[in-house]
Length: 266
Image: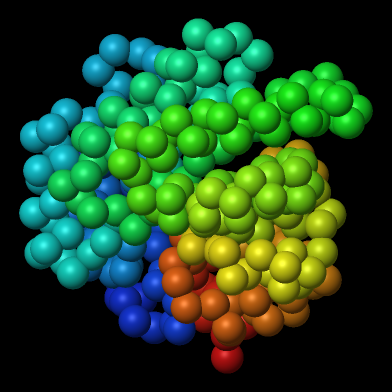
């Protein structure tokens, strides 16, 4: 049996927000990760990044185990929907596959009562000309409505901020009463003013993704953030009361990020 390094301190209830991290801190499956992390965090972000290969999604028996662990550790989950599909794919059949996959995953994970489902809506067009953007927005709007028509609670869908301006989808998010996953790591790496983004979208933000970056590499530990980013980040965190997920993928990056938060929180 693989020996993994252990957490040494619980962070449950330590901050005004619920603190979480991903289900891939250890190079192991969902259940071992949750067993090792559950006693120390308020919430776990279940990474369901891949969906196109057979048997890649957790089996119902795994979901049942995760539900049991949630009770055991007083833990909640959120689900990151797959990133290998897109509801705005240029091909209509791939759009339909994306919708069907999202609905099947929501059904699969429903026994966990997730706090939300983070959804990537990539901008996969060659230009930002008005007509091109409008067509993409219309596809996003139509396919989000198809998802909601299946009886999905609108505010459980958390549209994640990616590498394009939030404004491209903010009207649709408001109209459909969706929520926002404000990925501060993405915003900072793209040079956006995160204070302004939070002032504008904080009321719709149900979850924050937090990670560092260097040049074009993101999802690194928070020590990689420049001094210019630290003050606005802390300003946001001090008034946020929902879930903050440290979206890193190794024990070392997680530990470093937790130490960064503790140091600067004081």
